[in-house]
Length: 132
Image (cartoon, rainbow, N blue to C red):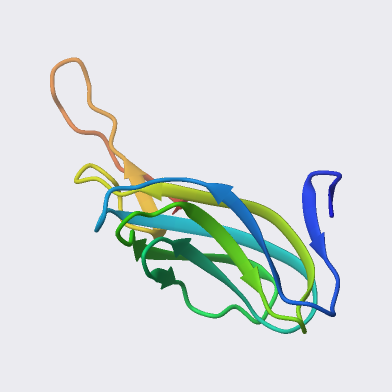
């Protein structure tokens, strides 16, 4: 069921949450999925097409990220769960990678102030940023 900003699945039958989506064959995409209230079983992120591209199995609560290459004739992004999985899907993101994209993960950034005369000041930071 989908209500209150989340998709909830109860234990009993395998199923999937699905969104129609196309990407060019071989296009690499980053995914982020947030799961909560897991009662058991396994979930995974899947890109459906002529073949399936599956992310790593997920068997805990939390926020999970990864990358997948789109299969030929991709038709859907799916969150697949087995019959033992019960819990909530809180959010799903899929972003096509590009040469300009920063790498996935957590990164520390520092800012260096520069005076109008071009003199660098002392670095300020670190500022933690999570890239999805």
